[in-house]
Image (cartoon, rainbow, N blue to C red; front, side, top):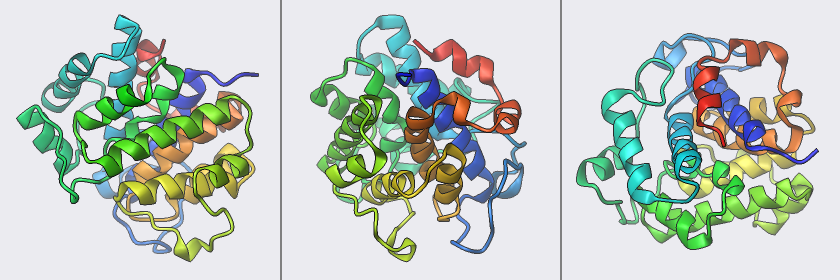
Length: 262
């Protein structure tokens, strides 16, 4: 069966929610084996973060307008930031680059502004008609440096190849990721290129949705974002039917997710 946006969005939200309790914790200082709550952000089990909120804002804009409109997407981001739109309850996690960009109404373009804050919301764009330049523009709402914009373009291309049926290992290789790298050589902090590599590496080295997202979260550090991006890709590959039922049952605000899909 052909992957749908629903597969991707639920995959992202699950990976995000798995990672939220462990964010900022060093690799191998814990083991994530199931969906739990509290931890770093003291949120109930199944709570997803800014990664999924911003992805849903993009989806909701496209659902309503049928096209990419960065002004509309920015307004929805501001509504999320200021009014808790697109959240399970309230905003509890937001990157510094994203805050500054939304306050200034322009994306940041310095070399130090290449966190993964635009990549984390990018995979659902694979299900839109977005051109490469439109993908760059969506990234540039907050992250305007070329490293960030090109990582987003590349990730959407990788996702579209997975949708078309390419294998995870072939996609990883085509996008510069060596699936045979040792785990110790995979970085999982906030740098956009590291998240890009880590997500594709996890997908290429596992054979189920659960294995992929747990591997991603257990890399440590930026656990929610690595889990979210890997989960979005794994959702494409394995479908929502590949997600453990107990995780889907625990996931919060599913009605909100569904309302934003097109």
